[in-house]
Structure formats: C-alpha cells, structure tokens
Length: 397
Length: 113
Image 1 (cartoon, each protein chain N blue to C red):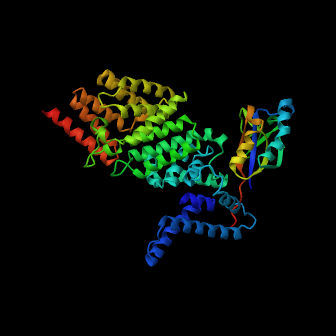
Image 2 (image 1 turned 135 degrees about the horizontal axis):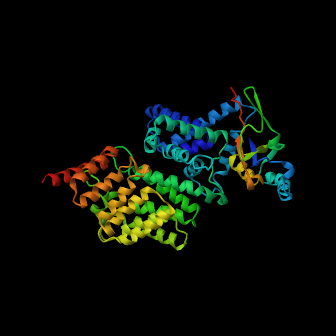
Image 3 (image 1 turned 120 degrees about the vertical axis):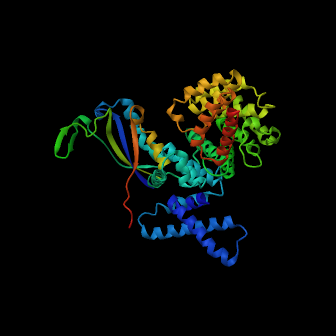
C-alpha cells in the first residue's frame, strides 16, 4: 500500500502521511457504512487519491516545478504493460537498496518502508537509540527525494551490482522474523513470509543467479522447521530436540533442489553454502546422525568467502560434534575476545552448552546467567532459564 | 528533469594541458553519449591546475587549493537528467572515472513556500 502510494506521490514522507490519513478516513467511513468487501483495496485507493490531491495542490504552488508529477504519471501509464516484475514491493526494495544509500540506511529503510517495522524496533536490532535510527531513516528519505532516486526495478545490466545489497537486506529481514529480536513470540511470521515472497520475486527476475537460488533455499530450509522450534507451551526447542517428522517436507524438497541447482552452476557463494549446511540438517535422520564432518567442511568454505565471527561461532558447534566439546570450547573461548561478539547472547549460550556437556555445571551456570543478561526474546529467555535450573540441580546433587 | 552538479576529480594538479590524446578523444564522444542516455549538459568548465589556486580562510590568504589532496577538482558541469539512475549512468561514462572520479550532487532547489 505504501509502495503503491509512493509511486503516485513520488515522495516517501507524503506517501506515509497519505497512508495514515487513509486509515483515519477508514475509521469514520467504515463505522458509518460498514467495512467494504476489499478493505485493503479501499485503503490503497484512498491513500492514492490523497496523494494525487497533495500533488495537485503542490502543482498549483509550484507551477514552475511540475517535476514531481511528471514521472509518477508516466509510470502509472506504463504499469499494466511491459514491466518485468509487477510487484511494487520489489520496486520499493530496490529503491531502498540503491547503492547511493549507505548499507545500514538500506536495511533500516527496507525494514521501515517495505515491512512496516517500527523505528524503535529497528533501532533495538541495530543497538542504537531510536533518535539515531529515526535521523538515519529521515536522512535516507531526504536523499531519495533530493537526488531523485527513482522507484523502479533496475534494468538487467544494473541488477548484479545491486543484488548483493538486496540479498543482504532480505536475509536480515528473514533473520529478524525467524528469531524476533524482542517480544513475546519467537517467530514473526509476517516478516518471514515477506522475505520468502521477495526472494521468489527476485528469482523470477534473475533465474540464473546462483546466490538468489541459494538464498531462497536457505530461507525455505530454515523455515521448514518453524512448527517444531517451540513446544506447545511456547518453549524453545533446540535442533537436537525437534520432531523431524513434522518438518515441512515440501519446503525442504524445494530447498534441496535449489541448493543442487546453485551448486551445479559452479559459482557458489555464501548463501548457497549456508543453504547446503541447512540441507544437510534437513536430510539427516537425527541430530547425532548428521554428516557433521561435511558440515564442518562447508563452514570452512563459508569462512573463506564470508569471514565473520558469527560463522566461526556456528562452526565451533559443528566442531563439537566431530572433535568433541573440549575442542569446540577452545575455539569459542578464542572468539570471546572478538569485540564484534560482545553482547551477542549466542556466544555465552553456546559456551554454556559446551560446559554442560563437559560436565562442568558451575561454569555452565555462570555462562547461562551471562547469556540471560543479553537476551531480549521471551522464548529464548525461557529456554536459557530452564537450562540454568537443570545445571543448577546437577551442581547441587 | 532534475539537475545535478557533476564534480570531476583528477590526480593533482589536474592540468588540462596534460590530457592525453586518448582522454581528449573520450571527452569528444562524451556529449553524444550523454544525449543518447537521455541527459543534457547545460554548462561545464575545466579548471586551471590546482597549483594556480589560492585559498582564503578567515583573513588568511595561502597558496594552493582549500583542501590538500591527491585528487583535486579538475572541473564541473551541470547535468540535467530524469533521475539519479540516469545521472549516474552518464557520470560513469566520464573519462575522469578512469584515473580519478566524479561526484554527483543534486542542485539545491529552495522550497516553494
């Protein structure tokens, strides 16, 4: 709705205001006449009409500058015809991920404008204050307006150089939905579904890009486990405890196919490698029977292409399954010095689990307490609290 | 159409008399390429080398450009283009990008009210 309105308005701030106005108008009109058959369409049409009103007013004010109206009308005429991807949202993503904007602004804008995530939530995910994040978003919107960054999916020749930013943003969006940084629920299904949908659109647009395939595979294989990630009470279940018979077979099959397709191109990037790891988990009959040596090898490849301390940390978990928890603990302890991981609650959580497996309950309890200090999601907090109680009990007995 | 200033940066001192014949040939083609991409150069200037510049800060006058750098402004032009993507496409074809670079900045339009 925002994307459709933005195309008419040619300005994101105006579009956001028009959308809000449309909601206000709906409150009055629907209370009076009842809710229309297609409330979404009603709201979009109203917001677009308001945007056109604003434009008309502006046109009078700025008779010397009809710049804003011209391109919007031209695009509207073009719309039903030859546009390769008739999806406003993808167009908005490409606008938000324009290389003329800083990467953090790209992510923040996409979350705010494409996914409707509140600025406060984005700020928390980036560990900055809400004021800082609001200023960042405003600056980016100003640049879009002042420099006239167009609302469009780039031409084929421009796509590859824009692709990396778009993939990164969609992946972050998925991650934010897969394990919500804050709040009561573990998963924010709306963000996950939107990320999957956007990747499908992207694949339709760029069928030969192995990394798009890789990302879609990664999202499908990861999300295939959604139903089993918590128990009936909402308690978090780790991979080891999940009921594999309830994983989404169709999503897994599609994901596996996509991974094979990406590997067949011979141009394997970080998303395809991550997807391959997810694929090994998907096909394994049980946690213990997973092909862990192969998982470690894939992590080694991944680290070469994407040297990230988070990847190194995940690799350590796989190492614990091949060489035992003591070897893994040494790697995790080495990573603890990395300032990037300070405040990353998975590090003490993984450390705690390794210490628990090494039968060092007192140290494990300390590490669980440290992780609990850093975690913001209720389901994850409950999981860590349970584990802490368990090792506490062992310790005392 | 929107208007942009395109600032051309070249290795100091950026003397137009030092331009190679290859560079000049590329520049000669540039006007046609701009038009082909849907833009128009409204006006443009090359500058004398940065060694001829004089800087003033407060009431202190010194020789040399205002900012000491390996690359200096060698010239600028005003470009009219439908949007930033077209402007960037045009800017990318400028031969200055080979050994220096260009900066594309929208011109400030004072608010109507």
